Structures are given as C-alpha cells and as structure tokens.
Length: 252
Image 1 (spheres, rainbow, N blue to C red):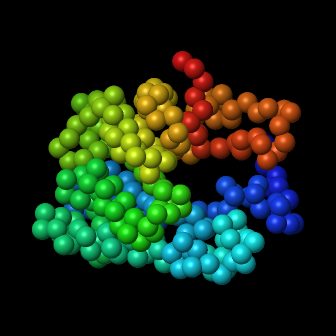
Image 2: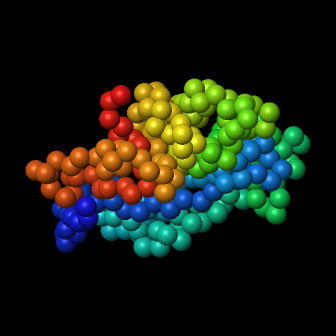
C-alpha cells in the first residue's frame, strides 16, 4: 500500500497537511556507559515538530500561513532547540553530585536514580526552552531495547541496574513513564517472545501509545498491516508500517 499525499496548491490545502509536516528527534539520554540504564541501545529522545522554530524564534511565515506552514529555516531552528536541550541535560546532571559521573564527553547516560528522573529532567529542560507550546510541538520517544535488558536465567527485565521486573511490572513502568502524555512512542518495549502479550497489556492502560517492534520481527499479519477501508480516500487510510506497529492489536 502506497499512500499518496494530498494536494498542496493553495492556502485551503494546508489544513490537510497539519499532521504531515516532518518531526525530527535527538537522543537526550543514552543507555549503557556509566549510567544505571542497562540496555546499551536504550535512548530517551525528544521529537520536535516543524513548527517549533516559530515557537522559539518567532515566525517568518506570512500571517495567512502562520500555524499552518513551517517557517523558512525550520530545520535549523528545530536542530538548535534539540542541540541546546541535549547540552542542558548534560549540564543538569553535572550539577548534581550523585549524577555528575553519568556524563562522559557531553553524553548523558541517565540520572543515577534511573528512568523516571531522567524523563523528568528531559521534560523540564524542554519546558524551559519551549514554554506553553511544548505539549503540542514536542513529544518523547523511548527506544527501550528491552530485549537487551532481559535476563534469560531469571526470566526478568533489568532496565535499571539492580531493579528486576516481570513483564507485568515493566508494563506498569511504561504506564508510569507515559502518564502525563509526553511519551508517545516506545520502540522494542519487550523481548520478541513477550511482544504481543506485553503490548496488549500496555495498550489497555495507554491506548494512545505507538509501540514499535524491531524491523525483522515476524508479527502476525493482522497486526503488521491492519485492514484498510476500501471506500476511504488514500489520505484517510492508515499507512502500512513494515516494522511491526503494534498500536492496532486485534481483540484477544
């Protein structure tokens, strides 16, 4: 299935493009290293919209287009916002005696107390940078890489050093991290064997989350490619996501 973009030839067409403008993301915290986040591939990233430049630097867009079309130079502006946030996160950790050692060569490896505090710091930094537009123009992404944190001998996940969780407890942790709505996407939330069962439990608590499996995971066809409404126009249909978007699980 190939999705065709709607027409963009006049001011009236911009409404259909509001959710289609690109976002860019940058990791603010990393797993592994000297930090408590066990999975080396784990990342806590911030994603910002193409409109974030207007919010942080003022708009160069004509009045009729404002809020509907990104300003010139939006990519540079968005990159600057994310780069400044990355540097500020490292600065916050270095100012905390307990977490100063978690920053190496400018890379933040998580607050000493783990995921919840790391998420709190990321959001606080972005709120200061973006102000009231932060909830609309910025969201969180967690590359959980939970398969790397799974302890085969014990059948448990160790996402944070010394804290071993069952699948159900990991679901509760994700629900807590996403409670205020900033975290919208979790990638590789469980090991392959737990993926469907874990995602069912998590989506029952947080149905708005987007959950992504690793690219080569063989997910059931009804999950990988949800049925499309043949009567819907291409712009109304949902695109096929080839790497296992698990937000549309069929009833168990």
